[in-house]
Length: 130
Image (cartoon, rainbow, N blue to C red; front, top):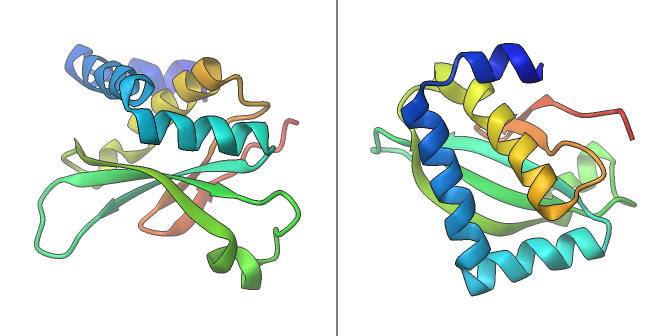
């Protein structure tokens, strides 16, 4: 997944993601929210979504308690850690953008596995390697 998806990113897209990640590290609330979730061993989710009436996609960084993995409980256990507007222009950019974003997030925050990827609130990818 890593090599082929990153090859699809333009240099501008890579720069955009790297800039967002730097801003996350500098944002006092978002950075602390992510650190707290990681320290609590919560799963991290990246949800690529679009709001009604908008033309650009956002990404929410969410946490999910590791002990509540049932589909019925999922919505009640999700917590938004950060919300980034305007990260993508197209739905087709979802996999390469968020794969790259997830790999970088894993490295920066020392996650034990890649974040789960969601598209408009629906699970698309889950890393089962841990």
